[in-house]
Length: 347
Image 1: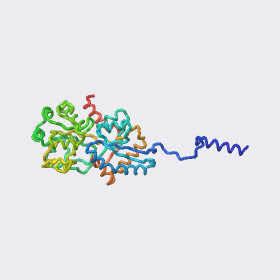
Image 2 (image 1 turned 60 degrees about the horizontal axis):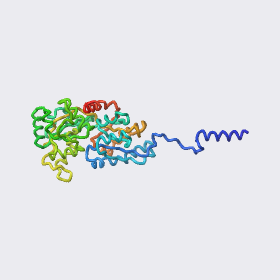
Image 3 (image 1 turned 90 degrees about the vertical axis):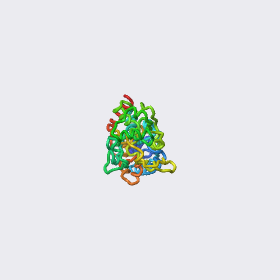
Image 4 (image 1 turned 180 degrees about the horizontal axis):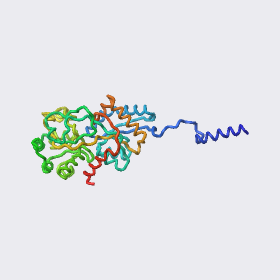
């Protein structure tokens, strides 16, 4: 009888702990049971150039996460979306896991709670930072300076076209641009949620003229800042909206006669002038989909990206967006971006 009870107890224990009589296997935390990750980048530069920069991130991030316990992770892939809005929509739908989004795009697509910010970029400060556009027009390059900042500015730049030179001359003479001045120019802008390319230029127009980018008679999205500067060089646009150090990123192309160059005779600093400077914009985000990324993985991704940007290889990757570091932030930090969006959308 004693022997029977012992055997019965062991059988009961086996079924209680391992249903179906399965052999014991160590339980794996569901947060670590990830086989693939997709990262989406916005097309703020030529997509091929972005992919060339960020391609190594696939192996670097995978290696970092495997070290942290994600042993089932097989692939990390990177892509560039067709538009800023497409990146926000993919993250909102959970068809991508991680996206590098401007603050305005994040503010718009985070409203329903399907995405969450985990990090904000830090950048080197710039040698020119005044809200007075005239002070940017000394013919000298805008250069990085020591010290990290968590904001950047949008600038509107006049090109070498006759109208561009007319508006630049007014600014450099200390005069203010009227709505008629601005509305008579051909503008190259970005997608509706681009902070530097559309949202904050619209905020500036509203504050100064109670108008928006959408009120301009001649404005069109260019599909990327490279296209904006190519059009500025060709005279297709008189004015383009850019991030503050965009001219530095395209200074070589401005003079290059090789394929993809803009073939201009003088430097970009000599042939362009800033006519509008916006207030500071909170830096770009790394955001995740709440549909596919768990709370634990958010924390692990924060650590992984912060560690990677401190390496030579990682810094070279994130330089595509002029990111020099990352800081942990929360959704509340982007409330000002939501306010800007509400001004632009008239809500």
